[in-house]
Image 1 (cartoon, rainbow, N blue to C red):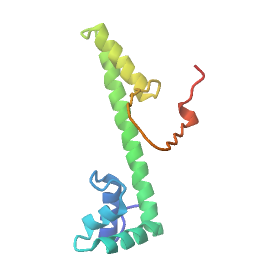
Image 2 (spheres, rainbow, N blue to C red; image 1 turned 90 degrees about the vertical axis):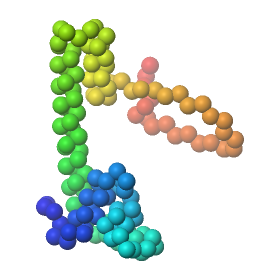
Image 3 (cartoon, rainbow, N blue to C red; image 1 turned 30 degrees about the vertical axis):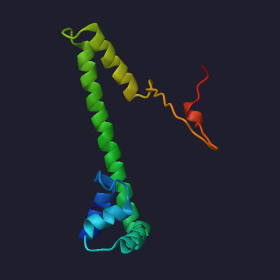
Image 4 (tube, rainbow, N blue to C red; image 1 turned 135 degrees about the horizontal axis):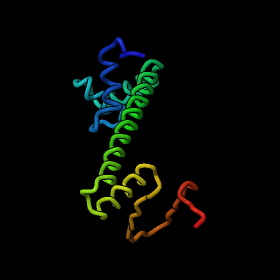
Length: 135
C-alpha cells in the first residue's frame, strides 16, 4: 500500500506512528494536523479516523516499516560491536562490554532495576510468565 491519497489522512498516520510528541495518541496526532480544532472534536474525529479501514491498514504498514528499520539498525549496531570485539586495539574490558551489548541485543541479558517505594492500600502485581525462569 502506498501513501494515502488524502494528504491530511497520510499526515495523521505519520504523526500517529512517527512523531515523538504524539506517539500513538490519536487526539494529539489529529490536533497536530488539524490545528484549528477543539479538543472534544479532536477526540471524536481521531477515533473515527482510527476506525477507518484505510487508516488502520496504513498504520499497520508504517508499524511494519518501522519494525524492519529497527531490525536493520540493530543489525548495524551488532556489527559495530563485533568489530570492536575483534579489533586488537581495544582492551579486554571494552571487548567484554561489546559482547555484553551483543547479548543484550539478542535478549540474553536483561538489566534489573530496584525500586524502593512506600505504598499504602491494596496493591496488585502481575508478573508475566515470560519473566519467570527456572533458576
